[in-house]
Length: 229
Image (cartoon, rainbow, N blue to C red):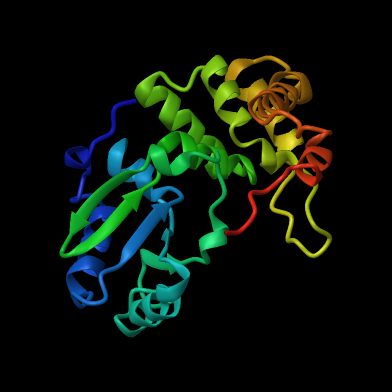
């Protein structure tokens, strides 16, 4: 999928609201804003693919500032019909290399970074409600991708999402169960998540990061350093 900044539809609801935000923001501080959730799908693929809000975040040091600014301009929840939700930067989780696929564009002096549709889908797989399934169907219908093989490889880059959650962590959904359910719906087949996704990803990690030299401590202890002059 070839996504470029010039293909962004700024006339769709999400585009107009983001453009309004960018135009209202003071030039300083210059913000780096990441847009995820359904908004990138609307901006790139279908202007009629709507949700109630636009999910975005700024770096930690600008989070309070952006949150307060959105509220002050009546762009937040309960103040705008199609509102902006300023999220914690940790709210978006996807494939480990998702930033390399994101589309970046300057708007009124601020940098907007739009998450690639495939990485949006990975984040939606963690919940997989009906509207999330509609997102999968939209991306595949509009682009013909990802195929089963492509998305299997893509999920291998998100293998950490399959790890057990902390007891204190809010559980959004069961990734193992959701992945199996997705395969039945999209490709009408079963998938062994451990064999197809988890084990290949871990095997590649072992290959890329060879185990440490067991004799390293001994060799360092016997290393003779040059004497100080």
